[in-house]
Image (tube, rainbow, N blue to C red):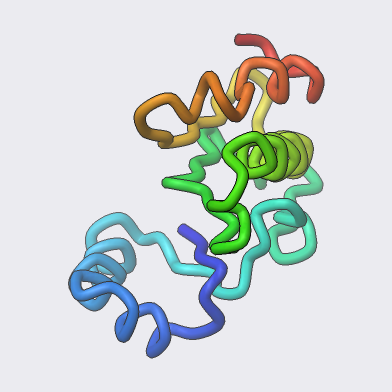
Amino acid sequence: ASTLLESRSELCRTYSNATVTSKELLEQWKERVIYGVDATKIEEKITAESEEQKFDIVLFNHPHLGDKALLESEKRHAERHYVLLSHYFYSAKSILKNGGRIHICLCGLQPQTWKIWNAARNAGLQI
């Protein structure tokens, strides 16, 4: 698991269930949390040089830029998030196993307005 947040304490301050969830990841699933991961530059924090080091699934839950200025223009908002997803797809591919899957959790009309299918195709992904 990974997060953009820089530390466990920041994660736990931000999300009320993070303490329990991160403990479960470690104890039950034998997975660790990697902090400070930029979804557009995953390979800078997670290296996967061999197929064995790569992942079956790479997941991005509720991506957002957090820029309130984007709320002024829905078109600009959609364009910026399209770019975010495009960069994410290229980055996620670098750590994805052959036959692996990339998941993105979006809501409402985001898949259409952010043109997720175009971003995925342009990154060379099968849909």
